[in-house]
Length: 390
Image (cartoon, helix red, strand yellow):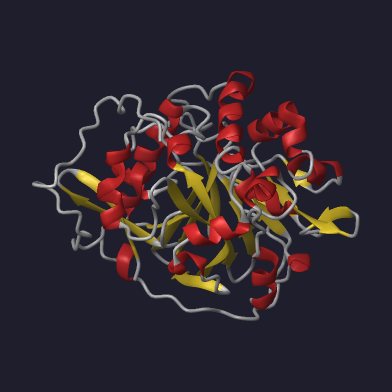
């Protein structure tokens, strides 16, 4: 663990003022915590999502609409992306499969088909478990002290080992009356991350069990280019590889595509291979509409082209934020530096803006790596805490 200085402005909570108990305060508007869900199995594929531009209201720092600050250029983000790549690829070079399983709690090691389902008006969101990555805390939080994590171990049992963050990797199948959209592709088996951890994503099997096999998916929205989100776009076939979603149009923000091109080798088996086969559409943009209920939000900082999905239907809403809100630690301490953010200051501002919007609009929060796939934020002692739906 890196024992360097703490993040400026962060004062560790003392045991006398914070017992570490999970807050029991009701979530914003109630619906964030209590709205119902049901699985919709075997739904037939509907017509292909037809994006149409509309005016966006994201307003997130650095977004293409807000323009409160310019997005860091792809060339200047390259050095930060190198740190992000090193963070993931070097997180556990010594880990074997046995070591990985020993570090993962039983709760996280149980890979069910649908982890959970959420209903938002006429839209259903299925959270599909792909794998779990044991990421080193000193790489992910380079300016935090070891004892800074003690309160989070108490609040979120099983999420943190002594030196690892056990990060669930999920993808989300979004079913509307007219469209079926997959948000992210999981880790897959071809990228460097899968090789380092000796982990293989299970998303294709999960999709088949839900009646939406990879071959039938027609729209894949990639939140960003990192391999735990876009590594599953290609799969092994014999001595070679083929697209996991051969009929799908893969939407990615152009800034992240340019970053992938600059890095070349790291993404040659995933994003760039899909592009070479004519399946990648770098048209993801703030306000891009996918049918009536889904729209994209440009939420940069983690990468220059990071995207979120806003779901609105019949007066209810949810926000799928991927790595814009990556874990409970950064929900509570959003100013902490996160090792895989390309622009830490912008990422922090985006996190805060997203959580503000989730609270003010009563949206269900749908992140990728939280202990639970659906939840919201409660305030205790002036700080936000993630609270998953139970």
